[in-house]
Length: 106
Image 1 (cartoon, one colour):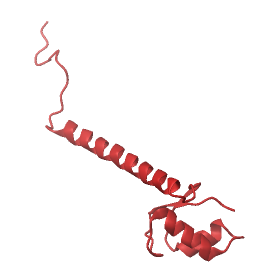
Image 2 (cartoon, rainbow, N blue to C red):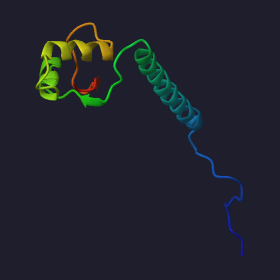
Image 3 (cartoon, helix red, strand yellow):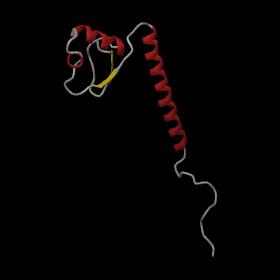
Image 4 (cartoon, one colour):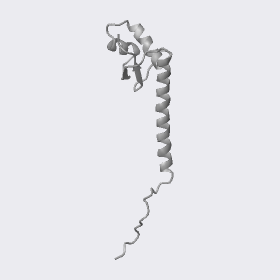
Protein backbone atom coordinates (compact mmCIF):
# COMPACT_ATOMS: atom_id res chain seq x y z
CA UNK A 1 0.00 0.00 0.00
CA UNK A 2 1.03 3.51 -0.67
CA UNK A 3 0.28 6.53 1.50
CA UNK A 4 -0.38 9.35 -0.89
CA UNK A 5 0.58 12.85 0.16
CA UNK A 6 2.25 11.92 3.45
CA UNK A 7 5.60 13.43 4.20
CA UNK A 8 8.15 12.20 6.68
CA UNK A 9 9.67 15.68 7.06
CA UNK A 10 8.97 18.09 9.92
CA UNK A 11 5.53 19.68 10.14
CA UNK A 12 5.39 23.33 9.21
CA UNK A 13 2.77 25.97 9.68
CA UNK A 14 1.06 27.13 6.51
CA UNK A 15 1.28 30.67 7.88
CA UNK A 16 4.70 32.11 7.15
CA UNK A 17 6.41 34.28 9.78
CA UNK A 18 4.30 33.04 12.70
CA UNK A 19 7.35 31.75 14.52
CA UNK A 20 9.10 35.08 14.16
CA UNK A 21 6.20 37.04 15.62
CA UNK A 22 5.85 34.56 18.47
CA UNK A 23 9.57 34.74 19.16
CA UNK A 24 9.53 38.55 19.00
CA UNK A 25 6.57 38.68 21.39
CA UNK A 26 8.39 36.45 23.84
CA UNK A 27 11.50 38.64 23.55
CA UNK A 28 9.46 41.80 24.23
CA UNK A 29 7.77 40.18 27.24
CA UNK A 30 11.05 38.99 28.76
CA UNK A 31 12.77 42.31 28.08
CA UNK A 32 9.87 44.21 29.66
CA UNK A 33 9.98 42.01 32.75
CA UNK A 34 13.73 42.55 33.11
CA UNK A 35 13.41 46.32 32.71
CA UNK A 36 10.60 46.41 35.29
CA UNK A 37 12.63 44.36 37.76
CA UNK A 38 15.66 46.61 37.20
CA UNK A 39 13.61 49.74 37.87
CA UNK A 40 12.19 48.24 41.06
CA UNK A 41 15.67 47.30 42.25
CA UNK A 42 16.95 50.79 41.42
CA UNK A 43 14.18 52.32 43.54
CA UNK A 44 15.07 50.04 46.44
CA UNK A 45 18.78 50.85 46.06
CA UNK A 46 17.94 54.56 46.01
CA UNK A 47 16.30 54.25 49.41
CA UNK A 48 12.69 53.59 48.46
CA UNK A 49 10.87 51.00 50.52
CA UNK A 50 10.70 47.51 49.02
CA UNK A 51 7.16 46.70 47.86
CA UNK A 52 5.29 43.97 49.66
CA UNK A 53 1.97 44.06 47.88
CA UNK A 54 0.27 44.51 44.57
CA UNK A 55 -3.21 45.81 43.89
CA UNK A 56 -5.08 45.98 40.60
CA UNK A 57 -7.14 49.16 40.34
CA UNK A 58 -10.88 48.47 40.27
CA UNK A 59 -13.73 50.78 39.15
CA UNK A 60 -14.26 53.44 41.81
CA UNK A 61 -10.79 53.04 43.33
CA UNK A 62 -8.59 56.03 44.10
CA UNK A 63 -5.15 56.18 45.67
CA UNK A 64 -6.87 57.51 48.79
CA UNK A 65 -9.35 54.60 49.01
CA UNK A 66 -6.61 52.03 48.38
CA UNK A 67 -4.34 53.57 51.03
CA UNK A 68 -7.16 53.90 53.57
CA UNK A 69 -8.24 50.26 53.07
CA UNK A 70 -4.72 48.79 53.17
CA UNK A 71 -3.34 50.92 56.00
CA UNK A 72 -6.32 51.82 58.26
CA UNK A 73 -4.20 52.83 61.27
CA UNK A 74 -1.73 55.01 59.31
CA UNK A 75 -1.89 58.58 58.01
CA UNK A 76 -3.65 58.11 54.66
CA UNK A 77 -1.93 61.11 53.04
CA UNK A 78 1.51 59.69 53.86
CA UNK A 79 0.48 56.32 52.42
CA UNK A 80 -0.84 57.92 49.22
CA UNK A 81 2.50 59.73 48.84
CA UNK A 82 4.41 56.46 49.39
CA UNK A 83 2.31 54.63 46.77
CA UNK A 84 2.87 57.49 44.30
CA UNK A 85 6.65 57.42 44.87
CA UNK A 86 6.90 53.64 44.64
CA UNK A 87 5.01 53.56 41.34
CA UNK A 88 6.60 56.66 39.80
CA UNK A 89 3.29 58.54 39.72
CA UNK A 90 3.30 62.33 39.50
CA UNK A 91 -0.22 62.69 40.85
CA UNK A 92 -3.28 60.81 42.06
CA UNK A 93 -4.56 59.73 38.62
CA UNK A 94 -4.86 55.95 38.25
CA UNK A 95 -6.58 53.78 35.64
CA UNK A 96 -8.86 50.77 36.08
CA UNK A 97 -6.82 47.61 35.47
CA UNK A 98 -3.52 49.27 36.38
CA UNK A 99 -1.29 47.31 38.77
CA UNK A 100 0.18 49.25 41.68
CA UNK A 101 3.00 48.19 43.98
CA UNK A 102 2.27 48.77 47.66
CA UNK A 103 4.83 49.63 50.35
CA UNK A 104 5.06 47.51 53.49
CA UNK A 105 2.72 48.28 56.38
CA UNK A 106 3.89 49.86 59.59
